[in-house]
Image (cartoon, rainbow, N blue to C red):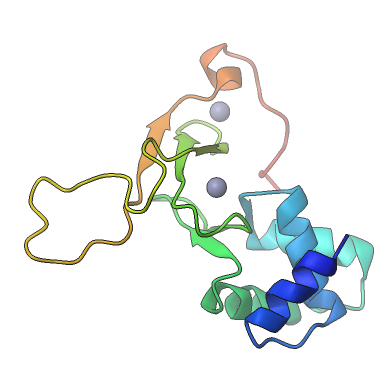
Length: 147
Ligand SMILES: [Zn+2]
Ligand SMILES: [Zn+2]
């Protein structure tokens, strides 16, 4: 199951290590988690991985383009392993829940600036803000993300 991750790491000229595979697996299973959640997920599986190691791995994977870092205004940085498709995010103002929103057009960039000022645009990042279904219905969402 991790064969794909090993190929990704090798393609990015990164050494295949168990902690790196663990971070990628955690992000596949739990998209849009913050650094603390990644640390908790990885260390739940292998307590020998240090917090600093997870920080370093997240930075290396982000630099290599295997992980995407998203940081909605006023929120902590979140990470996801769904990269390269220029998808967008919808964020709940109330509880901070984040969900993926597929690109409306399907190729990069999916939005055309009315005036690109001569820049060659290759990415459009949109954050939709609102209330998630739980918050809109007045329910208290789970403790997800509050740790
Ligand atoms: Zn919410
Ligand atoms: Zn996403």
